[in-house]
Length: 202
Ligand code: GAR
Image (cartoon, rainbow, N blue to C red; front, top):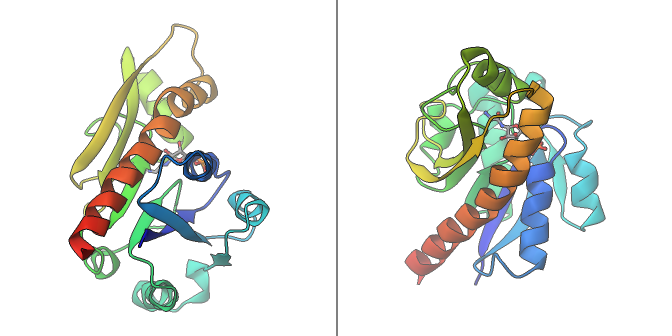
């Protein structure tokens, strides 16, 4: 049986699209995207899910009194669908140890820099590329890592470097990092982890 995967999203969902396309090409033979969970109902990622007949659900943090109540609701949804593995693909909500500890080495995240540079609290989306350009690094990239209670602090699975060019803007750099690193690395890492979980299950 394939590893049942949920992809958590908040925005455009180009990484979700990369996963959907890879799955269609047969490049994720050990896993299947069973659910897309969005943190808000305006995420374009939800349209991508619908277009590909993937069930989706919106769970908003602000509709719960506490972080724990929110996370317990998410856990229930995942348990109901037998989800075994979670992919954070541009998911902008924080998950506490209460959640991450329930899925040890079963949550992966894609981050648009070479961790440990430009990561942790406050480093997300375009901000990461703004920070890389402001620092003046000549090489950046993307990292796929396991998620634990430390923001961007879990074990690294895959990394790929991307060169910065002289006239880069954050937007131009973001697109290059996505095209040359994120959209390639994420499906590869997802297959690696899905295969490992499938094997462990026996
Ligand atoms: C991606 O660049 C992803 O690496 C980043 O947000 C973007 C989402 O784009 N994630 C983070 O910064 C997490 N710290 P997408 O919605 O088009 O996949």
